[in-house]
Length: 166
Image (tube, rainbow, N blue to C red):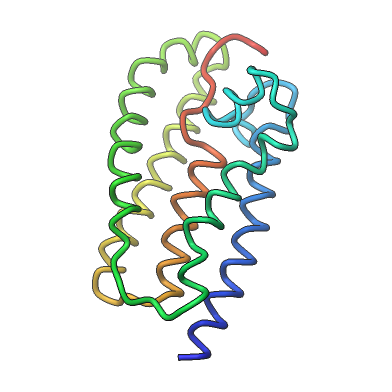
């Protein structure tokens, strides 16, 4: 059980740093690109005057808060909160992309729109496939990894900016 907790702690720390890097990457370019798509959460914070470094740390810090329990004690429960968070976000993302894809095509180009839709789809499919696999083998380590996939999507590509240049 101790090795499971130490694996979970290592995964949590590594995932936090990767999420910080993805958050930085997502808003690092002066204009939205495929690698820097200005995801919705960070874009809203930046446009309201939040300093860019603080806006980049919001999603990784939420990840730490949501997963702290998995590295303190062995995992015994379910990850219901992830499904309750991911299901509406998945549906909202599909609706958002369907409504804003024409604007994205006009302002960022077809390559950007198709690329963001493809990567969004892959990341969401990875999360839901991981959810099914997690239902079969529930451990603290798997809980952290599954949560990482969702928060990586949120920090990098969820609700990409499809409007005019910033």
